[in-house]
Length: 134
Image (cartoon, rainbow, N blue to C red; front, side, top):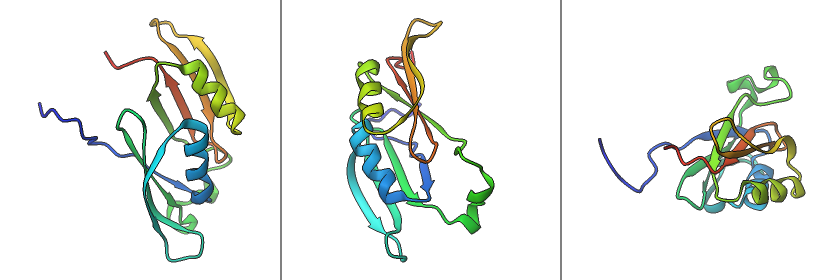
């Protein structure tokens, strides 16, 4: 099995308002913006690359409703991302203070970890906790 510190899986999330999504993820969850390539339309993002403190990467782009059928998805995007943190309670408080919708407050899970979930302004679910994957 290949071993590396470079992320090999980069979720790519499309947002109606990608500019606001990038700002939200930086403020609410603490992502660092490492690249931002504008789209052709004014205010559009072709690809923004954000890094989580562990090195994980997520890319953000302006969704094209006629291509992805965004209008048919309803109020919540059916996507969920999990982030590892040593302080799920603190990250939850930070996210809610920055405008995230509380979905599941910090709580102990049945497998001995602590987890929480919020929704960003476009409904993408961001879960986080101290589960390391072991």
